[in-house]
Amino acid sequence: MKLILAKIKVLSPSIRHFTLAPVSGTLPVAGAGAHVVLEIAGPGRVWKNAYSIISAPGAATYEIVVRRVEMSRGGSAWLHDHAQIGKVIEVQPPQNLFTPPRTARKHLLLSAGIGITPFLSYLHVPGLNYEWHHCGKAEDAAAFKALLPDAAHVTLHTGRNALNLAALLAAQKLDTHLSLCGPEAFMDFALATAEHAGWPAQKIHKESFGGATGGEPFTVHLRRSGHTINVGADQSLLDALEAAGLAPPCLCRGGACGECKLPVLAGVPAHHDHYLSATERAANDAIMICVSRAQTQELVLDF
Ligand code: FES
Image (cartoon, rainbow, N blue to C red; front, side, top):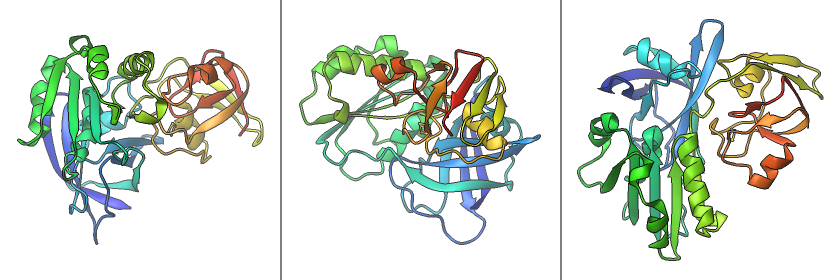
């Protein structure tokens, strides 16, 4: 669908708040936890980036918050440097992989950095029983506070070391579910702490966006289609396959949903997702192509 950039608000040098309105008609309703994928046309390629919708379900517009990521896949840089009010952008219909779990009596929300955004939409859920801790850089605090409604109760920590996560987890009752969103290092830390504390996987929910940060170039051979594709230093494996005209499965584009998992037939992946278990990672026979790359110069995938 085509949406028009209706408003741009600068929250900090690296964080902007965008409002997207329909060119005509009304928008599909996006519930708490939903995201949209923006398709941003750059020179010779299209960037597809997922962003949480922070506006209320049923609102006339979608609001998103975008951090400008250095060494990023490019979409955030375009939104910060070139996007102007009135620009029409292709946007995929909203998906929701991170709805607040219904069986939770209490929601323990843990976010870091731009991972604050999906939980902003949780604040629209009437009567949600939550405890929210956010870890971020001191220079981002004012920007994030500007996004929080007065009624929100969030404990802000300057970096994850300021949060005693083990103690926080130990203080929860059995009917609490843990929901996580943040950068790769934060997710690894939070997941390891929760697993060490004995939290069952079905009570841990996670979302992650923008995890593909580039790296060494490599080559991928697709056994079934016969394609050989070079993955550049500044693109993800998923981006490279899409640029070659293929349509591999994907939803979150952030290494959390599991949709883009492909079997590895040869080569060694460099795992950056939060979907595969430690055992699955060690087997090196599957890869989440939206965020993971290669330790070897070549990978052979069953696709
Ligand atoms: S698209 Fe969700 S894990 Fe890759």
